[in-house]
Length: 176
Image 1 (cartoon, rainbow, N blue to C red):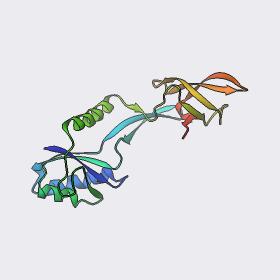
Image 2: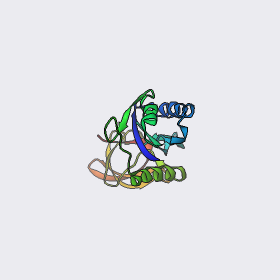
Image 3: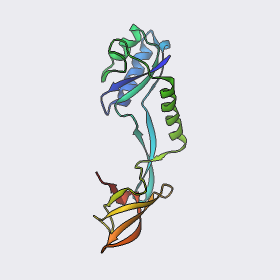
Image 4: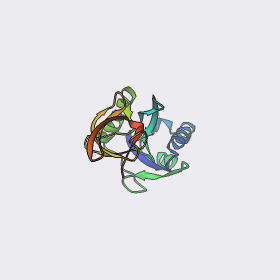
């Protein structure tokens, strides 16, 4: 069995996963299929001073399918509602992803189960906009990021003087 990627309507990935799994189980070719996965990762965000975990898709609009490719299995997948088609190869003969790519995706799935990532990643030297608190509408440069406490150390210019402030992730947003 090899891993294939199908493009699904964005926002319907979980529904496609459920309907595809149902179609596979009802077919005579269930032994030609392995896992059907929506690549998601667990992320942590601060809301109202509390850490909350949520799920985020890291390949929105795509579903991974482990399968043996033949005419019958191709039709089961292709005829599933809200699937636009296979990614890679030609529409009639899709190409599987390499085992290295599949392993990288599967390792990322397993890694986030044990170590959730923050919802927003910040980099030192990045410019952010303060959206809440006494420094609202000020721009600041990230000096240090503390993911354990979900806090940032920013340098904000107040009356043309650099001022160090510590803010929660929820009090800032990235500039476009």
